[in-house]
Structure formats: structure tokens, C-alpha cells
Length: 352
Image 1: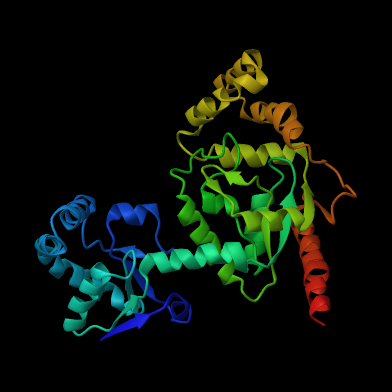
Image 2: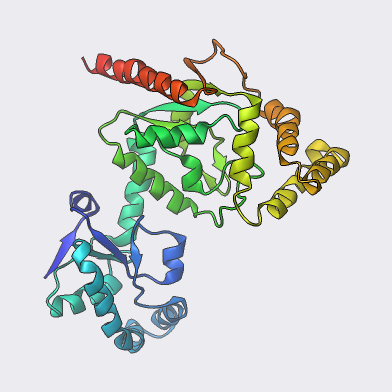
């Protein structure tokens, strides 16, 4: 039996298995986070069907589509059967049209219960856009501090302890600097980034706030939604600081865990020539040649990054809370107390 379901109703469906039947190219550009791809047409077939529809007739396009799809049906059914035990199957295409309807009809004939998303991915995309334009109203707590103080590490630990912490750099697959993409691979599309952020926020619906690391509006190739970024600028600002020794060790460990990290660091370093000059960049390259990674990192922090960002490396009255992260566990407990009594407390006071 085929059941039509809206985007809003999808949120109430327990453990849905989302299946995107669009081409692999459409899927790679953007999909609903977590969706599987079982394409009815591949990229080339989709182009041919589209050309036939536009230049010949809709009937000819349907005939051509049938030729492409028929040999694939047994495999599509088999794959659907393999995942149906994980939860209810929800099929979608671009606008909830012929592609999802065709697959759902075949599976219905095979005796499977399937859902079809009304409006397809386009309806989901509209919901995400509307949320960031009209519906985002959470308070944002922002961790600020110089490079290497452990902001991302703190977010990870807070999340493990149940706090609504969101790692924007992880979603963007970029650390937000000239060295930001090292070892991380391809970045998501803008639509995918926004969808993942939307889903992250939904996970913390019981909270009136979220916690993030300070970022510029652009992180690598993606851009933080305007209203979310405005919330970051006006939210609770927390300063994180740590010793230079700890910062160097943390960065060396993070950036050298990948097999080809040093060549990537060299390439990124050359993009700083206009800012730092050839002589200094040559000195940095020589430190890399000598495998002096600690000294390389220390100098880059002191001579470039600390001057660029300009955060204090000590307590400052300019922030609502200052976190000394030299003793990590102690600092984390103090931050959690601040969140519970100042951020949660403020929320409860406003409600009462």
C-alpha cells in the first residue's frame, strides 16, 4: 500500500528509511540527510529522457524511461527489501512526481508498504529555507578564542554530555582557515550544509539554545545562514584560552594525523605569501623540511594567527564567561555550571 506523507508528517514517522530515486548527480548535489540513493535513471539516462520530453513529446519520454527502468526493477526491489527491516520506506524524487510514484507502485505490487513524500526533495528544501528565514529563534552560545585553544574539542565533549553543541566546521568539512581543508576531503554543497544544520538543530528541540564555535560567515565553500549568523553575533560570548604549549601540541596532533598532511600544509602555506612575504614563508618551509613541526606551529600561531584573530590569552571582562582550558576537565565542569545556571537559568526566568 502506498501512503502519501508530507514533510511535516515525516518528522513524526519513527525511524524512516529515506530513499532518493533521483540520479546520482542530483543526489550528490543535495538530498535529505541520511537518505539512500536508488536512482531510477543515471545522469546520462535522465538527460536523454529530459531531452525527449522537451524536444519530442511527454509520451516519447515515458517510453524511453520505461526502456531504461525495466531492466533495473528486480535490483531495485531487492535493495528495497534489504532495507525495509530498518524502518518504513519513504521514497522521494525532485517534486514527488513520476519517478517516486513509479518505484512506489512497483513495490506496492510486490506487497510492500511504502510511503511517498509529497512535493519530493523540493518540499523539504522549502522547509529548510523557510526555517532559516523565518523560524530560527534559538539563543546561540558562542565559544571564542585563538587558534588551537580546544574549542572543537569542547564542543565534542559537551555534546557527549548531552548539551546542544553543534560543530559547524564538521558540517562544512572545513576548519575555517587557509589550512582548513587539510585531510578532510570534499566539502558539501550549500544546500547540503543547510540541511545538515537544520537536522542538527532539530535534534535539540527541547533546548532554547545551541552552542557553536565562532566562525566567519563563510566556512570553506559554504556560508552560514544569515539569521543563524546574526544569532551568533548577538548571543552569549564565551572566551576560551589555553597555554601556548597545549595549543601547539593539539594542532600538531590534529593536522599531522593524515598520511599526506605535510604536502597539503605546504600548498596551503604558499597561499599566505602575500600576507607574510616570501622570506617568512621560506623560513616556515625550512622548519617543515627539518620536521620541526612544533616550532613551525608555534611561530605560525605567534606571528600570524594570534595577531589575525586577536583574542586575549587570559581572562577578559569583554566576555560573559572566560574558560581557562589548561586543566581541561576542571574547565569543562566550570563551563557546564555556567551553562546550567546562566544560560538555562535565564531561559527559565524568561518563561516564568
